[in-house]
Image (cartoon, rainbow, N blue to C red):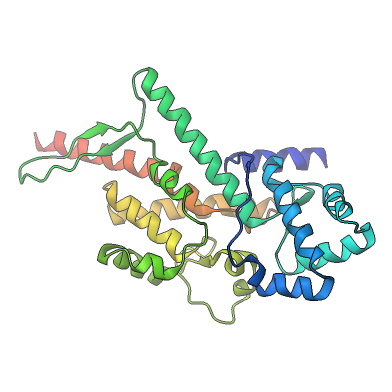
Length: 302
């Protein structure tokens, strides 16, 4: 059991998490049919208990709290363990909480901790760049002259610059907002939509990634679950960084290989935000490969 716990901790280290000082709730939290059903069945104290649990998860290491903490949240409002067990079972059944690392967590809290972790990585990288010679982070310049080749230039931002901008946005971005931001983004959304499976009566439509975050499997890479807006963000970011579409397949295949390793070790994929991989490490690799290809092309043309 100890070895299993250490292995899971190492796996999650690949997706950085940081303890939060806040918990994000949608303004229509109490209008959620699952929350309404929770209050109808167990009373309004049940939703108060759930919010307390979310606060504890937000401050928890790896966004996880043990069952005793869940009981403590119930005890604070006068609820005994027997009744708390019924609330826990209900929330697990409908995805309001999930089992993780021998404890309990919430998909939204995990993603918020990931975003904060990525922001801190970005700040650390900027400090390193400001102290000495920048290393390894390049992007392509935007030369437009007919005879001008594009040279790699040092970029003081890290490959997580897009993720940092998105941290201040609400996690559940509405479709109307995305489609109102201009024709170019409409095109990216349309391309993302064509790359995703169409929801119907499939088994994955009843799982938490789709029900809570709108994530759908990709048509050509079925292990990758990602929402339309997340995929559109990846496509837009790769275009801006000059990564040609023929190279995109390599990043998707690398992500699938990593997910396949998770499954082979008996892990669930429900909590994994693939968008952070595509915008981070995989995107950085594609930029480096594109830069090297252009260097070789210039050398051959001399």
